[in-house]
Figure 1 (cartoon, rainbow, N blue to C red):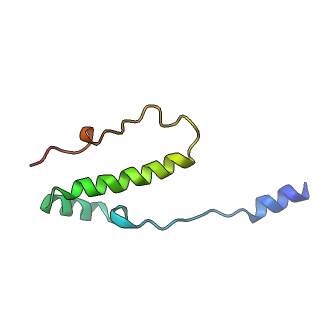
Figure 2: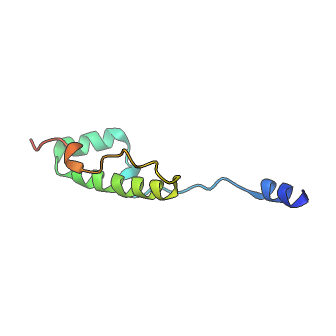
Figure 3: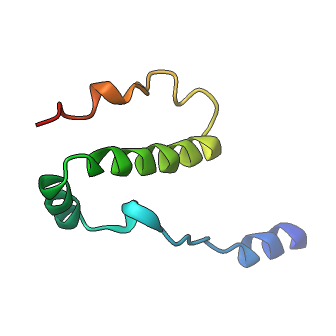
Length: 78
């Protein structure tokens, strides 16, 4: 019992620093891809990496219905 209380009281939430394109505000993302549509692929690649890591920590099977093909998400070139 004492051990479980010790473990429960010493557990702390972990924080992580977001770096790369994902650290940008949505307004900056919109401005940047408006000025340079090719940057959308870079943002998307960052998001894929972020989501992949999140899924590695998720329970097994939560990704069974996800679509990974970027052509279905990216807009057509202007």
